[in-house]
Image (cartoon, rainbow, N blue to C red; front, side, top):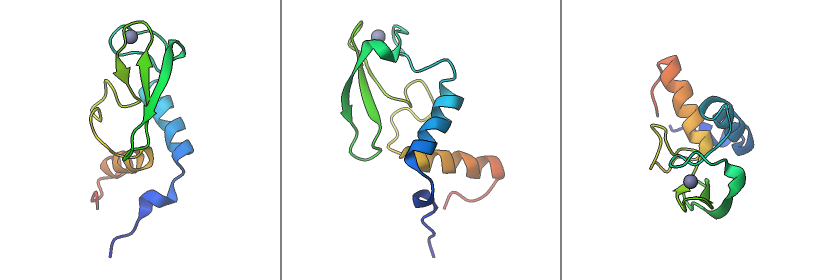
Amino acid sequence: MDFPIHSLIDEAQAEAWVLAHFHPEGVSCPKCQASVSVARHFRKTATSGLQVYRCKRCESIYNLYSGTVFAGTQFRLSQMVLLLRGVCQGVSSS
Ligand SMILES: [Zn+2]
């Protein structure tokens, strides 16, 4: 029986965790390093629900996973945090 543990974690809490651990100095454009404050909200991805930014300086598109091993994946933030939790604990990803 699958246990939908990803529904037990709040997306806002997962976003705060990702920001603290992946972007401790703040989110910035991976191409020109401009702060996210000079980017505009471009869209939200349908599957992961991630906010996608477009840099006003260089026009690059990025999200919280850009520049990480999770770049290009469609995990929701809560799924990604729980996946990392499982890896760190050595438990099955299912
Ligand atoms: Zn840029």
